[in-house]
Length: 248
Image 1 (cartoon, rainbow, N blue to C red):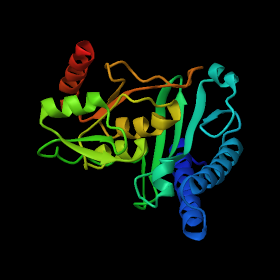
Image 2 (image 1 turned 180 degrees about the vertical axis):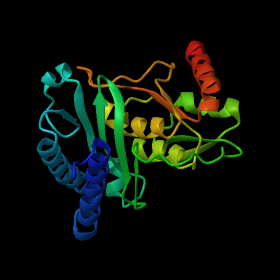
Image 3 (image 1 turned 180 degrees about the horizontal axis):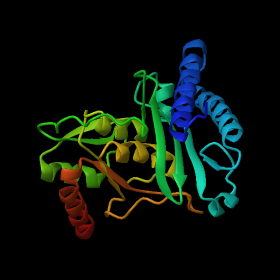
Image 4 (image 1 turned 90 degrees about the vertical axis):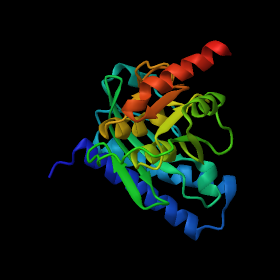
């Protein structure tokens, strides 16, 4: 039976998560050394399997040397073998594995595994959104909260919820644990392509922090900001983010 792109992404993200969990439980490594070993092990499997399953597609991974020839292809797989290396190395659960497929620059397919929680969320099987939290909850980095996010949260009366990796934060909105993820601290395409595909399929608003669409498979893979939130909140969040930008 042919494996769809959605099924492939989900299977590989989950398998990479299993590799990472097994490595962490069976290794004497810790901290940065454990994170490096995890990145390498998960990346080797993901790249091998994607090249075998979709040999005609391009591949962009955080842990692989980039090949600019991908920019001339319509389909490119964009993966982050271990999003949240710090959290993984510290034994926390707020880290993720990202497997995405961008088609003509748009995040079409995505799977985000949260191995520490035992779940994989996918664009192929979106679940109904939970009701909004009261008060609203806004996600920020646990180590360097973005000033824009703190400003917007204050104006909207939202509670701040600190969390680790980008994938974990984005999926917290999908899972209903939070309502807004506004990031302006710098990311790359592999940090958000899979989360954006999953969030969009779930019916959430996804964009740059100024409301512009998110585009992938660029020669420069730096993609510094994004907004993932409930659609009914997007207008207010974008307006307040613009207010902050104009005032600073």
